Image 1 (tube, rainbow, N blue to C red):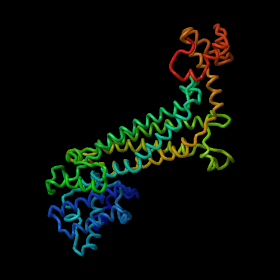
Image 2 (cartoon, rainbow, N blue to C red):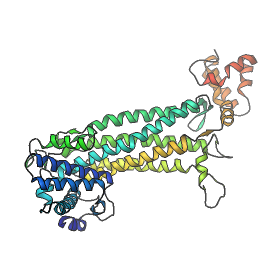
Image 3 (cartoon, rainbow, N blue to C red):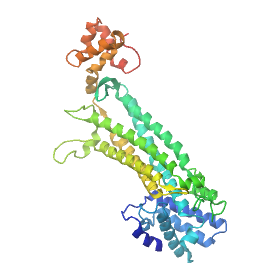
Amino acid sequence: MKYTETAPKLFMNTGTKFPRQIIWAMGAIKYSCAKVNGELGLLDQQIAQAIMKASEEVMEGKFDSKVIVDVFQTGSGTGLNMNINEIIAERATEISGKKVHPNDHVNLGQSSNDTVPTAIRIASVKTAYELLIPAYEKIITSLDKKGQEFNDIIKSGRTHLRDALPVTLGQELLSYADAFQHDLEKLKEILEYVKELPIGGTAVGTGLNAHPEFQERVVNEINKIASMGFKPANKFRGLKLLTDMLMLSGVLRTSAVNLYRLGQDIRLMFSGPMTGFNEIELPSQEEIAGSSIMPGKTNPVTVEASLLVSAQVIGLDHAIQFASMLGEFELAMGVPLVGYDLVMEETLLAEAFSKMSDLVINGMVPNVEKMRRYAESSPSLVTIISPIIGYDKASQIGKQLAKEMSIREALRELGYKDEEINTILDLKRLVKPGFPAK
């Protein structure tokens, strides 16, 4: 494996290796190309069958330890392609007893410039279907279920971290369910774009040294292996631009922001128990010590781990944005990094969604009375009478409420009877549209 032995001297040597999904995708491509070339009479049948068998073994992970080239390599991914070609050629030679050449046979009808951009798209789609979409569905289901369950649990709303009008815990959770549902719908939409594969473009998109039917037939074979609806791309666009991948990363960045906001809200509700909000309990977080020096302390460790995931995904998205700009004319030059970062984003978010669902959302226990006391004591309840007495007068009363006067006292001074006050201050009415004081 001459190329693979020499390449590490010239590439970076950071130990950053390609993930299993991309190696699997490279194996699927080599299998499909060998099968098509054999059927077209361009490749000796015995050699074609040997390449296909070796490619299956690559897909199974038998040679992962031999994929040694660093992710930080030549921008087209030639290092990865040649590494895979040489692994398959060596193994196919053993299988067939014939000399199988990494370029003449394994790489027939291909270039690194079309195989690696194809592989990173296959890998990102495969990871989305197998890991990420189920994790989206899981967190949406958890938020929706708990949102419905907690939809009558009233708490103080907060804006600018200051007391605001009442809301329900369910309303807060359902808003996040809605956000992630929109993210999931956009993800599925963009995946249809990412499914367009530029295999068959060879070096510059013209398809030179590949059979005219090569692209369509290879894509069909890939779909037999992975039934995910891949389709032929405009080969020139698929080689020179990675903006479909950037769009996919953009959805993941958006979800990372939504996850971050959810995590921050949960951390604040869990803060305490004596000097914070203490609005919820998270029993799962008690399973490990929160401090190495303060006995009995419980921290929202799963939530905080998810916040770190959010930060990493947002950073990876920025790297993908920059790498997507690398290149000129007929070729993108950030291919290996975009593929690695995107699969990493998907894997991280899938894990965070799953753990947040199982350990945090599903196990959340509201401190109902604490929430209600906060809601009833909020000075912002003066908003109820603002439509009657006007904003300026209500503002003056609101400042008094923040000090010593209760909202009941304020309503009595305005001439309301106790029965009317009870109706006006019915918290269930205050979390719905309308004018309770009228």
